[in-house]
Length: 149
Image (cartoon, rainbow, N blue to C red; front, top):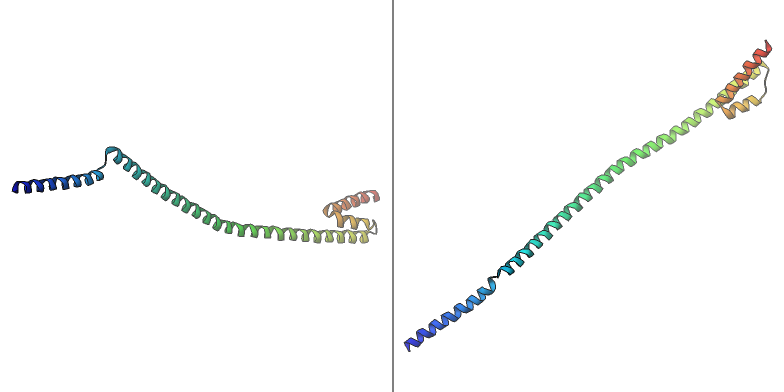
């Protein structure tokens, strides 16, 4: 009986080792399984790196847009200021031109009165044509002066 006890104990040990080996055997992978596992790990790592890259690209695009908005605000202020200067500059030019036309017409009127020659048409021509009308009046006046002599 002692002999059977030892034999039973040995059989139990062998069975437990074989059960343990089968469990361990399922944990021990074949080379194909190891290769597949490494491929999956590499694919996972590649996806993580791709996601990090995408996130950094988005952050850079966001910073670029923020910078453009900040610059756009400054450029917009400059453009508004420039348009305002052009607008008021053009108004000032028109006002000065109008005043010069009136002064030239007054000069033509005074010259006509002083010389007692010419007609009021030169005043209208000077008002409408400005410098050109005044120059034309002066040329006609010079021509009249040569005829009188």
